[in-house]
Image (cartoon, rainbow, N blue to C red; front, side, top):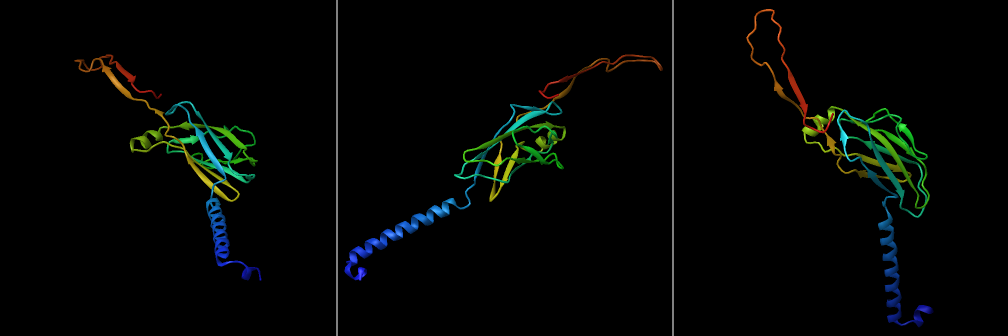
Length: 198
């Protein structure tokens, strides 16, 4: 009875409004589907030296949803020639999950409330294998993958600045000398490091 009493123009108008509402709901659902719940940022050292002291890397995981995030873990993938210094992790509620592969350590993080974040720091060490990695054109970045209940998100750091040694033999004394059998003479070599690494 209600439909009969309405004009065709009114019915068309109501149908159009219904379609617009349905499209809005559908778009909202699609845009929200697959959206990550957390955001990752990283802070890297100004430089790291090959075979030098360990350097600190900071990772921050922030909740960007309107609900809590649980079952959080972070896996770091370090470039060839770099490894995690076992036991060096620091951060409230953060612990080592797996250190079987020190080039790919895993950490457990606390649950995050709305707008909450968890920041942790680790120490990394560069060894001589990093030289070969750089020579072959490798770019030393750190990849962090955060897993949580319902999904995961990946972050890649800026390239690390590496201080490399550059060994040169700057001078050799007594390169040519006439000596008798059994005669003792001194040859002096001067070796310098023209690079920044040790």
